[in-house]
Image (cartoon, rainbow, N blue to C red; front, side, top):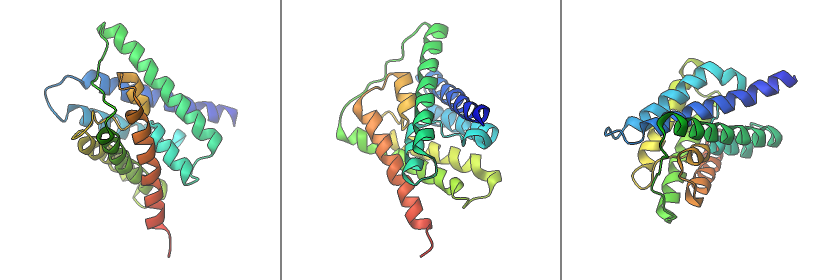
Length: 201
């Protein structure tokens, strides 16, 4: 049992690490969809490869949302979030060592940024819950969750950097309140909305 718990947390560390590194390396590409596509592919891959181990949250906003609908315990949820942040920081360290550069992402405390991040995380959490509540076929889980992330980032990027993940925000230097609280709020609202809509009346 203890080994299973360790595996879950390591899966979240590795997944958040890969996701943050993918975002890090895609920043600066001239193609506007480079970052959303890279992030969606990584998330989809981890859903299929380690989803059976940890659920492949890779995002504190998703974990907090699932905690709010009691799909993960508070203890596990908090350890997931710590693991995800560790993965984000590890990606930042490796990125700096490999490239010799520090990613500097323009960040603002504008309420519009927080709203955009919340909307993006709402969409992601809503999509994740469709899988958690078993409303989609297991074979399509990676496509649904990866697609939700792609859409969430794309829409959020209209008014923000389109991060919608506090662990990634830490890793790429978008460390301000809007990139932390915005996604967390959106994750909770997205999970709660899906729970409400999917409940038997």
